[in-house]
Length: 612
Image (cartoon, rainbow, N blue to C red; front, side, top):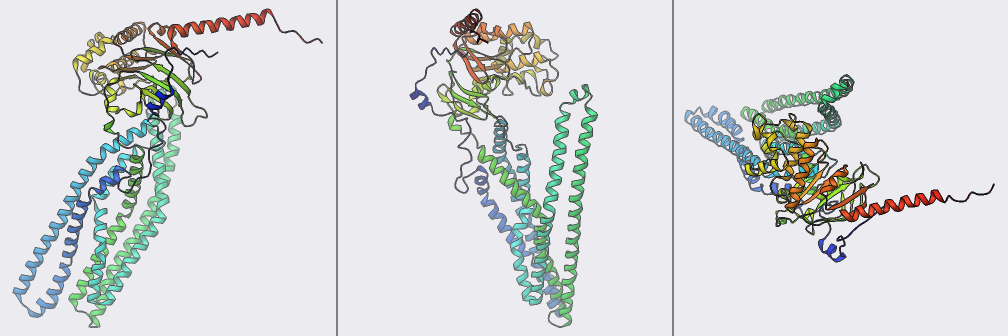
């Protein structure tokens, strides 16, 4: 029988309307289309580098124009110096050519330097946005693989600052080289056009043939590594239960599949590379042979023959580089799309949302919490008010939604409908970095981090010794910490592996109460505590209660009701009873008496039997 005691819990519809809907709900406003260069920070950032790319384009123009110097020098030597036998002409032409080569080297060095510096700045500007997107994606339990975003950022940066982008700057100059070949002889120009088309077609064919095998090999390798990493994290359980050999057999099956897919992909790639080399070397020989044939016919000079061979090689160089970089380009394009999607879905938090420190009043109105893979919600229309400075004990059987409620209250559950209000403002309307110090949260699954005890208690911010010691004393940890090898400077190892379960829980509790949080949510804080630890917990809660802090204490154990001002009892995701403790207990007792009286009446006055 559901019992609701809502004294002091009534809320006018006008107040709820003015509070607005919770910003942390389903995130319906995320990812709306926006004008070009404004739809994501990624496009804005790249557009801001247009000056650098323009400079690279200018240096590329200079470098490519000066690459004509070997051809011009060859023509001058063969067609002027060799005929005139003038040493002065040779010296002057050689010095001018040497100076031009120096200018060409300077232009290439300059564009590389600009690209490297631009890459560092690009990474610096995007890394924080990518980190924010990845963090938000994990927080919102995205189905995608957010950890790949950092590899995507590296791939995009390397393409934009490497040979890939240089190929795009050099390729437009191929027609210039071909035009010079036409000036030497039209046949040489037409042959160069054919030489450009053939490798381009081969590259397109190679891409279409190798794309699917490469993706299959990459996916198989990713699945193999994911399987292995997930199992290694549970090495102790595998060893204890004798599961190592069975899982090794499964991993070897995945590895065989990965090696087979990789072998097929490599075999096809090597085949296409062989075809490409054959065509490239054939083109070089044909170019020289065609020039020699034209010399025999008397249509060009020997100098023009050698110059034509150099020009043809130069015309094909950007195409070869473009073909070689095409896979990098496609990878960078896909990385760009994934990063843009990530940043559109999870934009940087608005720093203008900063507010004054909260008082701690919490209001839930028609809160529905859902999760992927579930047919029905976890929380179903929860309404509750926790005035500032009160202690609410949340009770209920396993699976009733208590831990989900804890995450909803602190604003980290990803799929929420309804209103979650802190001081009558949506919890999503607070800047989380500013709100964080005012919230204390102890999750059911304790997660500590590699570092010292003091650093973990201080949330890895600036360690203020007075606050750290105060938090440790408030949770009864101080004496225990002093007995450790280095006291507060003792390193706890990854995930706090050197500590017992109870020690980890008490350090996490000290972290939750560190500083001056106004809202404290404790999810099963006494699950791993002994009698001494539980006594220290109750004393800490009473101390925080005296300090006027709003506390949600979630537990299976009814004895924690001793510190409660209010009770919230959940069953199957719904509020079974809520309100001031005395009122709820009285209502529950009365409901139980009425139920027992009804059972007794049914027992004393059984329904009449139908006559046979």
